[in-house]
Image (cartoon, rainbow, N blue to C red; front, top):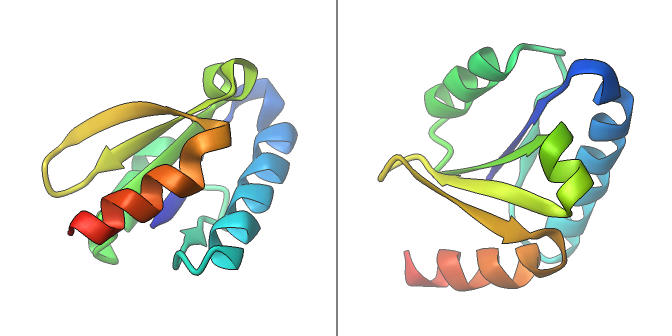
Length: 98
């Protein structure tokens, strides 16, 4: 699991939420990483591919405001919006299927 942020003006808020999410996933025994280099969204996605992340969670300004996260399956190239409140439950179920 790799968490990427698509920043703009709210990059501080996005980074804080991404760290909260990272800790929440790890507390739920879901291995997760987050970019700490301040790379662009495109660079973060490329890095996720290079390290072999099966799933990427995309957190941007719209997602922060709407309370959703985009979960991208890197193998299928598909992504789905998931409620922030349900993310751990969704990921556990998804990872169990794999």
